[in-house]
Image 1 (cartoon, rainbow, N blue to C red):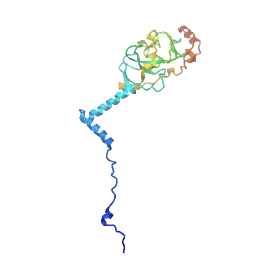
Image 2 (image 1 turned 180 degrees about the horizontal axis):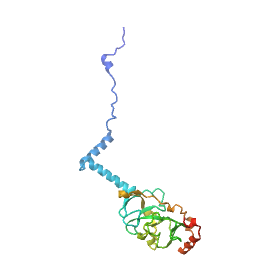
Image 3 (image 1 turned 90 degrees about the vertical axis):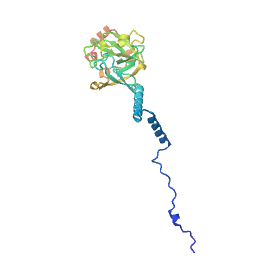
Image 4 (image 1 turned 45 degrees about the vertical axis):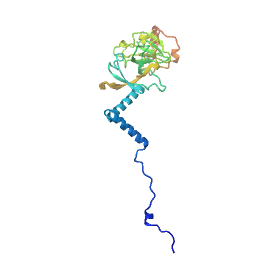
Length: 261
């Protein structure tokens, strides 16, 4: 007699319950985020449109504070490249990771205590340790013994400077000039002021990287090649300052390549 239990119809149809698929359902975190967004849109006038605009505003505020900001040109001191009313985009992170301002950079800085209670935009002509002199026998500015041809960006008809100076830029400071030299109040005008007209690097807000408005004048701002051949400041900065007459005589005695470098 066969005593083995035979499965009944009910036994054959029985299957253990499979795990429930919850992959398509939001978890507690997802539900909480969705609920928060829903509450905000219900609370705000305008709902999702207002929330989107607020998020965009917060994003722009963060960018303006930490990354870049627009700056409106207030005067003609940087013509002809930068005109009154132009808006430039100032790169605020350009000098935050070890690199400092370089000769030829157009920078925006806080002039409080040096130039006045405002932000200014000028071109860096000398950095810490540089020996900056006006002028050589051809009327050009010399940096660390090298004459600089600024004709590519100087305002047409302007000389590099009608004010004579002979300075060594302290470490951590900058000697700055406007491109429209006859219409610019810059380091030349503050040589007798506290700091000698030299701007602290710590007061630099950022580097002007491009004109963004008006659109027909929009362009990227490049560092000119005029300062590329200026040597390092160590050897020249240690020498006694030369007079303008000495420089003129030296320029006349130099070979043509050196005199016009």
